Image 1 (tube, helix red, strand yellow):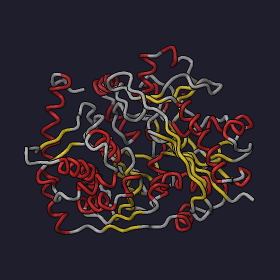
Image 2 (cartoon, rainbow, N blue to C red):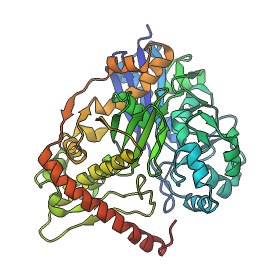
Image 3 (spheres, rainbow, N blue to C red):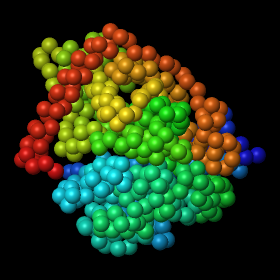
Image 4 (cartoon, rainbow, N blue to C red):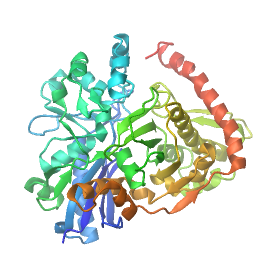
Length: 500
């Protein structure tokens, strides 16, 4: 009896594998970690083969611990982190590490493209700015700096499509991850070959874009031997982690907004047409006919992890948030800029740095911890304000990721944004989204809307408090002022005032 769906999530620090029943119940779940490499300043890499090894370990452990027969799996959905550029040859061999979403090595290439006056053309086609984090500049960097790899490359793959390829032997590119490729036209779902040529690339170096729920292949005998699965299980194209997370959080109708609380932070607003903003990110949703206007920051749950490691290693996450809660909203004037690996939207500055402001002898660890948590909420609000400029209307927020497990932190975000926040099963939203995509693909669900009704349940609701929102409104203006003032300082201190 094929009554289970397998979801695989390729995150930044670990992969997750989870088995779900059709009603959204988690039957078994596990994760496996892998390293991130920082070989040079601005370089942030991972080895896709280490992803695959972790996926194999995770699936085997999942089957063993869950005592599940692989023959019960009806389909597999894979989601993954954004903006990879994985070079593979025609046999599917990985030719090198991939720069990941935090990598900014292609900044000089982006500067050249801007000087050539191509920004407006690129934005008109892709709906996105040309910045180093995206896939396209990384492909161009590979051509310019690693011709030995580039010349052997048949395709550049995304994180999920690489795992799909390892499972099925098939090369694929899903619609939702197409937004990282600037010659991908989001309105048509097709590649603009002329723009690709103008950038010195070929549209033939990325597979044809297909619907996220399309079955692109089946588990091969080789993959079955490595993972403990059986051959023949259908595998769909899958999608972007933020898009799958949005779906798994219940975001399918216009105005519903996912609030992301994984390693990174940000939001994804569901729209029925592609609305773009020069300082935000536009991507197709995994749901056909829907788009996501996104804000993506480098500081989400990663801020809490950093504070625990460096400021309070002896404390648990709950103890940290409890200590932070002893300080009044606004942290008595202490501010933190959460730009720990440069910053993505809406400031797009790879030179940005984390900054504490307002410290004094009377300030305590608790002030610093609360300011760190508040900074993530402020960066969320910063992106939401930009989205309003694009005409996006946020009706409600749906929180996902590990940060959503903190009631204190989630309430803080509600107070800062003035939005009611709904919390579904936060730890499983992304993998749930991946299996919904697979479930639609194999016919277990008739459509995405009905699938969400069957699978997504709300655990908590956080409504904004008017008094705290008023306090945060004033602190938010101070945050924006500090951020704006520091941009010039970042430029001067990092590169002598020369804009990158």
